[in-house]
Amino acid sequence: MEEETPTYPSFAPWDITPTTFTQLLSLYPATLKESYKRKLVAVAARKHRKHPERLNREDPVFDRQTSEYVKLDEWRYSTLPRVLREREEGKKDIKEKKKDAMHLKQEESYDSLFMHKEELVQLMEWKLKHGRYRPALAGMIKTNKPDVVRKTTCEAFKAFLDRPPIRETLDETFPKKSQDILMKPLRAVGTATASLILAVATEGKKNEIPFYSDDMYWWLCLDLFPGSEKNRYNYKKATKRTRDDGRLDVKYNMEEYRELYEEVFKLRDRLNNDDSNRQFSCADVERVAYVLRNFDVSGFPNAAEILLQYQVTVDEARKEFEQNKRGKKKSRDDDESEEEFILGVEPSESKKRKAGFGETGRGKKKKKI
Image (cartoon, rainbow, N blue to C red; front, side, top):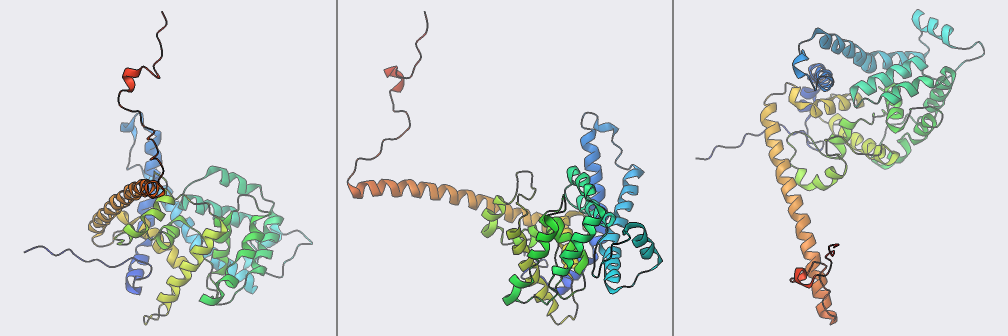
């Protein structure tokens, strides 16, 4: 009697249940710690390539740096959205009033929400540590003038349309205008960073804006996730959008972000209209995507078995994709020969060297005597 293949929860955006989503979300703190520490160890290992025996993987410095990053992550997901929300509502504590007095010029005032430069710099620090580190951006973001940051973010938040998105009006609620306002004057702010600025400022609003993260794009736009059975259908698209080393190969442009915005909307629309009465935010989707991207250290039940099964489907998809490519090429050659026969033309000569080429002596260089 054949052993039945075990079934696991679906992580597909079109199929994941609120229960599975909540379970993955609960694993985010542990996943963040393990994945970030692994990243630190990997960076240190590259520095010790010539003498790997000198690397101490249990060095307390890794734990200390991980703890610092966890605090930064909490600031990004909890503290900063709360500070911006209170600033917009006019609720300023003593610390906030001191910050305004220290940073705002005498004639400078705002009747709407804005962001300070130090907040933008710290947000960029989180972004670079959370994903792929680009040292140039860390330096460029600091060159923005404080008053330009405040003025630009204020204009972008004003242009934001806070209306519940529906399928028919996604083009209207998509924050293209706010994105453009942020990207033009601010250095180091592209589509992804602009989306992050809007994400922290719109959390809890009717029209929450998602952050354009690699993890989200992998999961929602390329349908790549542990246990995916759809790989054999989207393998061609996925290979075009990924590098040989596994990194995402995209342009981070408005078109891609528009695609992600719609996919996040569809997922939240389905989950939040379920009978569970649980409302999931864009930040929740972002964190679940991060867990799925770092699934091997997530602590999810049977994670190793799920990843093994996933790799099998990926390998099958790769073979099928390569076979289809070869089949199409052969079919194209056959079609050309058949067309020549129908038209009554002489078959085109092959570009390959004919037999006896060596005997004719053509193409051979004569030895100098």
